[in-house]
Image (cartoon, rainbow, N blue to C red; front, side, top):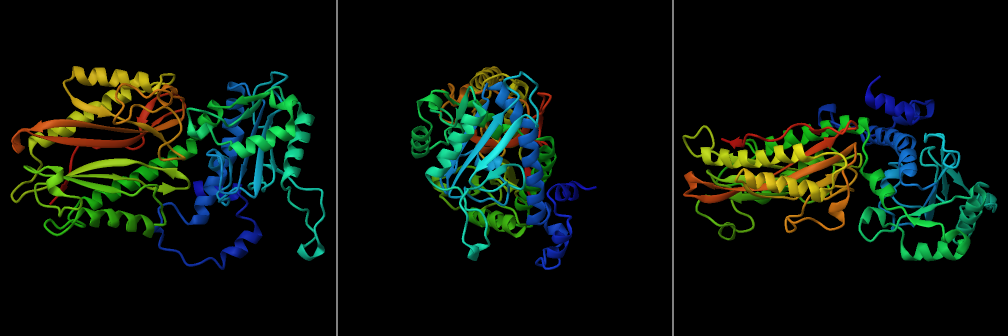
Length: 468
């Protein structure tokens, strides 16, 4: 059974009702133009990941961070950052107020954590495709609306939470509050106040800032997601190579803004998304960036640089590639430009070697910069986690303007099954350009596997793309 078909079966999309609905589905683009299937296919895959994440990843993280009950309340359009890691692809926002409660019923006995240990309860909102027990109000509704149970609402939700806590009697209640990590700081002041007033001192004194629990849940990736991400990365590579070619660029006519919007349109046409506006930069012999302006026409002899990404099934890529526009009679880029790229490649090699589970971002940054200086390379390192968010949860490895380390966010540690965008730049004097310094900025996505080993999601660019 294919990956998509298996996911559809897990999400109940092979039931008779689903087959009947599919007869009225709108006509789709040819399969070759839909590399990740239809939106329905993508949703099925996401739902499978959601169940795996809550079954396989969450129990161990709750035990690791000594939290036997995790309470995540939020209101519509003021969602906790962890919301998109614990909800169905069909859920675009919290429902009125939603309170997600996770309780490790095995913690007190010391039994090994597992999917049957963590109860998942939604006080408000839906079952999220069956992964939560959704509790409703005891109020009856008018027959005119079908006789369904009313939704929990307002203070009734806080009282339902208090009743649940009194029933479960947790020793530690994790809440999403942090001064360091945005991913761990999703509990709004209003929700904290309402919850605290309802629970009283008996239970609020058991509150503990969850900090690492939401951070690592957002950061942790699944094996099935890895396979999907490799395909995403391959799609990005194919698109950058097309964009940086004579199929798209006409030297002397094409502007950088034309490439920006080519990317945006191409992404949209394939049913994909992006999490940031792409950018295209030009470096030219004898010209400064100020002289080139904001939207230069691409000329022969230019060095081109892109920063692009795509979003599929809530996963994100982040990639920077470089190209050279051949001069008449040239068949390859000048040796000095190739050397400039090689210096950036050397930095990538060092970064991959220093990326080890248990090290902080600041420790990795320090080691990379020391080794880079030992090789005589002039550059900067500013890498970040990626996955459910473009600038993802986990340790920063420098910022372009913080090369001495990033307090707080750089002190987080690398964990298994975490992804990074290795982002950096090396600046090299190019003899063929009269010693002009050329900046080779590169960004390539990589994975720290469940085994702790770092590897590129696909590969890294070690040759300039050539525009003929």
